[in-house]
Amino acid sequence: MRTRIEAAGGELAEAVRAAIGWTHDRFEWGMTHAYAALPDWLSIADAATDPDDRLAAHAEILGHMVWDSLREDRYPFADGREPWDEDRFVAAIEAEDEVTAVRLFRGGLSADGFAAVDRGLCRAALAHYQDFGHSVIYVEKTREAVDRLGAAVAEPIGLALVRALITARREDLIPEFKAYRPAREVWTGRGRVVPKPADFCRASVSKCLDHAVAASGQPDRLYDALLEAAAWQLLHADPAYATRARQPVSQNAGRLDFSHAITFANAGRRIAGRHPELWPDVLLQIACFLGRNAGFVDPAYPADRWRIADERAFLAEAAAAIVDHGNPEYIVSAHLLKMTCAVREEVAANPNACWVPALTAALNRFLNEPFKRKLTRRTAYQARQTVEGE
Image 1 (spheres, one colour):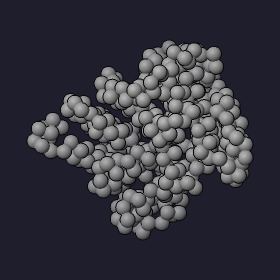
Image 2: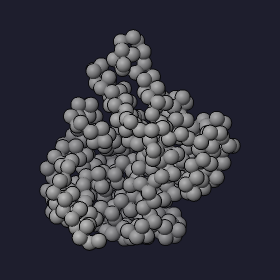
Image 3: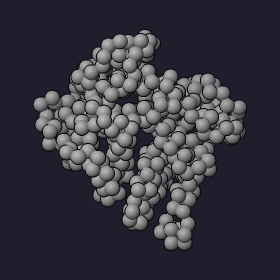
Image 4: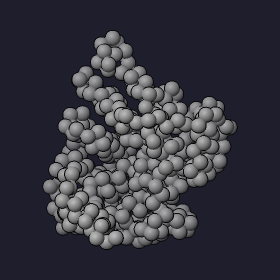
């Protein structure tokens, strides 16, 4: 169908708009990477000089939507709308009240378009350290998708996003991140300590949060330190945790554990650029990622093998090559794409930053280090350990 649309002189994006309408209510738990990867694939298509690459990027978008919704029932959204009230909307998300949240969302869209609901969505996504950073990433990618595809997709893709925010796991409510809420409550924006990446590379969650609060008066410098620490952690991730069979579930840490700190940071920076009052939430939640990952790094890992001589050329080549990724699983190609685009955007936003060499090297490792997608021995071992412990 995509090829025939193009041959007839039609717009490939029209097929994407139609597919969003067909699929948006078939995701039981709300938005998936099928929508989140969409604007990045469109950016790859825009830059493509080969028509086959442009078509391939659109095929990835449509194929992922079909894969995630295939044989799924419809999960209808509530009818109706209510006048937009940002505080009520955020409260409805907090209360997991989908009916009210959906009606308020529709009311905001109908009155003033997506811009009217943007800050409420961002507040809801950042109200907790949640869903492994997906909430924040999904909000930003939804905004980008609406910007790219127009108001026609705002309601269907936005409703899927609202459902995803409703069902998101709130990880700051589990013991590992119990220090998050107290750190947010004592954030003053007047901390005078100069932040350093080394403060965060191997520190616990609570220590990372303490260091962030102490540097709260310098959000830009703190962001740079956190992003460089995230790049260092990915560069020094201990591969044993990603492949070893005999270990507890709590030690299962692979490349996505490290890359999500970076993709979350990218989305969070863009959100805070529009809504500066949300910087504390963004920065403290990056710190949560760093504390979460600190126990799975190896400072002696030979990271120099991944260093890049020409960062700009590497990023251009990585973006151009992503179309021919060779992965049969859409979720894998979505993460390769997401990470490539996030790093590219960060470098474009601050090309002379001190973290550029580390961040591009981290991307090089993420894209090019072989990794196992299925760990059968680990699954068997951890299943037996679980049963024996019951």
